[in-house]
View 1 (spheres, rainbow, N blue to C red):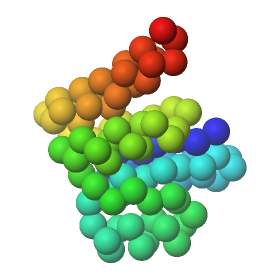
View 2: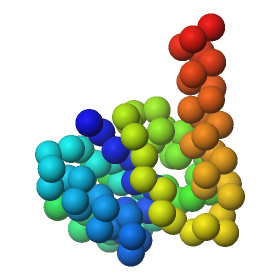
View 3: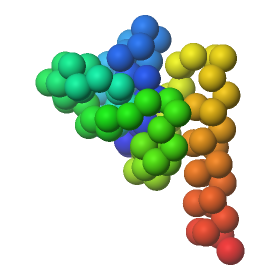
Length: 96
């Protein structure tokens, strides 16, 4: 299984992502900084450089996964709306 983590370097997503990786699942981690990208990459995460307002990065992340973890900023509706809109578009394209 491949899981997309919207904020793998954040407090909650970090713990969840590590646990998922430990049970032999792959984690695609969105991160804003190259430093976090290097650190998480060394732990075995697939990295996606971007941020919560980065529509192409979020869309790309959602398209390459089986499930998602989103425990980032609750006051950031775009970071939830973007992946959901991408999933809706994919569903529409696949089932029409």
